Amino acid sequence: MMQNKRIIVVAGNIASGKSTVCRRLREKGFVVIDLDEITHQIYEQGTDLYYKLVDEFGKGILDENSNIDRKKLSKLLFSSKTLLKKLEELTHTDIILRVVKRIKKEKSDLIFLEISMYLESKDLIDKYIDVDEDWVVVSDKDIRIQRVIKRNNFDYDTALKRVNSQLDYEKSCCEFDEVITNNTTEADLILKVDKLIDRKKL
Image (cartoon, rainbow, N blue to C red; front, side):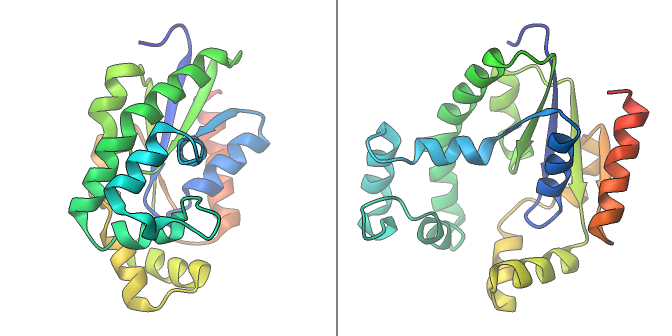
């Protein structure tokens, strides 16, 4: 378990605005550890996980330089919840242990963790990290679908499949300490973050 550091999780579904919230936290001077960045690291050629993923999912997930192509891997995984669960089994413990090391290296007494699939990994996270608070960023499903279409240049069916592949955090708001609703503009979302920081006296 973690020592004398306040840990706040920021969670949210795809296209909810979680990344915008965490960008604002960084702008305000807070330390934010992005679990997606750590995931990129463990996918690099030469790591144990790299070879496990190629063995499990085949060379079709590689690009022309034999690097894991995250877009190819995502397309494969989001077509099958069984394959997605298999990836989680292979990666989650390694990711959390790397997060623990990063937390220990940070000098700040307050650290935010940006996590896409927090509820799905909560039991494992709680095993290694003392989370003091968890915040969730939520948006209406239809709004998230339109954001995914615009951001990723997906057609409607592809965007819908990507959104539906995740647990809907909007239905699980009661499990979080703070809920940040993002159904309007980015400016409005940033204002909400600033107000929350002030209210928490961070």
